[in-house]
Image (cartoon, rainbow, N blue to C red):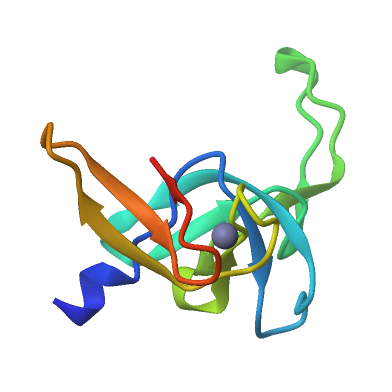
Length: 110
Ligand SMILES: [Zn+2]
């Protein structure tokens, strides 16, 4: 189960990039690609894409910048309670809801 534990990242989380060319960058998770173990993070891992002009569709063409997926194992979730990049655990509440637990401050969040 060690692999699935890495998928503690959820959409709209604030995350810190821990490795790669964007190391140290922070951003919001726009999308989680669970099957690939990757996520798309706002303004992180930007890739340039060349687009051809297509007047029929009103596309101007040129260079577009887009976020490319980044490995979730290269991300750390920033805890909303203590605002620090934290290791997370999981906990099941009495009502059956699963929550994430910050191993830094002990705070829980969904
Ligand atoms: Zn915390």
